[in-house]
Image 1 (cartoon, helix red, strand yellow):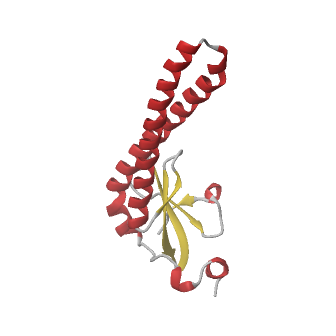
Image 2 (cartoon, helix red, strand yellow):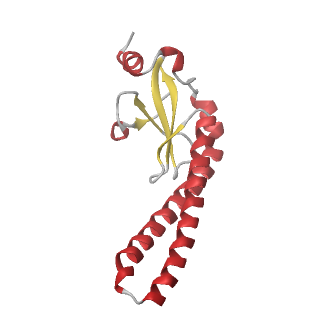
Image 3 (cartoon, helix red, strand yellow):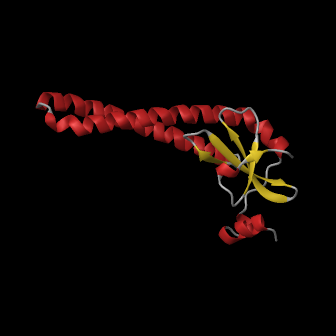
Length: 152
C-alpha cells in the first residue's frame, strides 16, 4: 500500500472510495462542469451581496422610526427569501456534481475535484471555472496549493 492509499484507508474504508475517473472521461464532463461552476459562482457572489445587505439593514434598523422599520422588515423578508432560493440552488449544484462522482472543492473559487489515478496511484484531479478541461492534479493528502499541471 502506498502513502496515498494509506491516507485514504485511514479515513475511509476502501469500499467507500469513489470510483476513479480517467482524464479522458473527466474532460468529456468539462463543458457541463464549467457551466455548473459558473452558475454556482454567480449565485455564491449574489448570496454574499445579500448577506451584506442584511447585515447593514439589521445593524441600523433600531435607530430608525417605526414606519421605516416596517419597510426595512419587508425588505429583509424579501432578501431572506432570495437568500433561501440561492442556498437551495447551490445545494442543487453540489448534488449534481456529487452525482457525477466529484465534489466542489471551492464554490467561491469555482473548483471541482474528482478522484483519478496517476501511474496507478489514487490522486485528485481538478478543473477551475476558467478552464475548459481538467488541468491540475495533486496527491490525496495534499491541499490545493500543492496542485500541479496534469502530465498523464
